[in-house]
Image 1 (cartoon, rainbow, N blue to C red):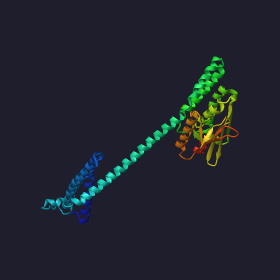
Image 2 (cartoon, rainbow, N blue to C red):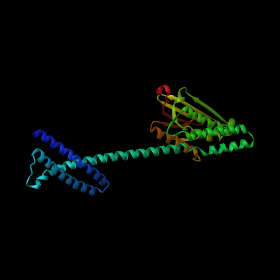
Image 3 (cartoon, one colour):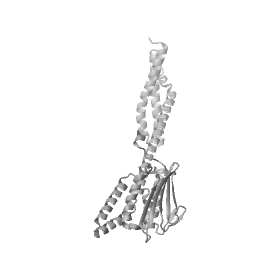
Image 4 (tube, one colour):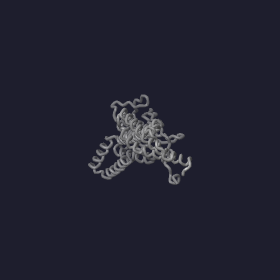
Length: 331
């Protein structure tokens, strides 16, 4: 025969096990009522918790009398459910814990979905901004190629087609979310400028100055493109004698400084923004550039427009200095 202590431990263990078993159907029921109206859900939870509490109380008393009291049977059937209020509070507490955890999990899932949606929208926005290249560039290039073919300058036309192909391949296949090394960005800029060089010939001067070590710095792909396009349109194409475009890069502390300058007629600059009479591509390109930088670097960037000396416009970009890791650094 079991002693009193062993019998009590068995009763407690059975009570806990039965309580756990009874919560299994509760979980399935609560999953269904989770989407009901609040008052319906509360009513069902109270009724079901009371019912389960009564059933648990009957089983607990039966185990207690059968094992601890050696088969005792009370004469009054109400004694079987006499501890229902205590069991009811336990079931309510368990129900509250369940719904609390369920609410927390749902909240975290909604946050995750929101973050995913925001990231997708963020990525789509970046791609849209990056792919808003000046269509006039493509039209002008094709017209220039057509003219070269008509005058039988096939070698120059072939070179121009090859450079255009390389430039479009770079612009279309570089992910705007990922950053590229500055040397790749300069490569794309050279392709673009070489194409324009065919159009403008000696009217277009090009100067590229990179501080040693900046070639491996990471920058957003085609971030310089709209700035160079603006310089071509307003500083070169608009002048009979053309103009010169200068691209510079250097480091300052933990920042990378990029500059695109021209010696054109200049523009009206108000509060760091260029005011152009036709309100066309210049404004769109600069706004896109600023929005891309804001999306990629939050507030840790600067885009400043100033008058170039002795004449022209200068655009300066400051972004955090991030260097591409070499294989030895990865190892």
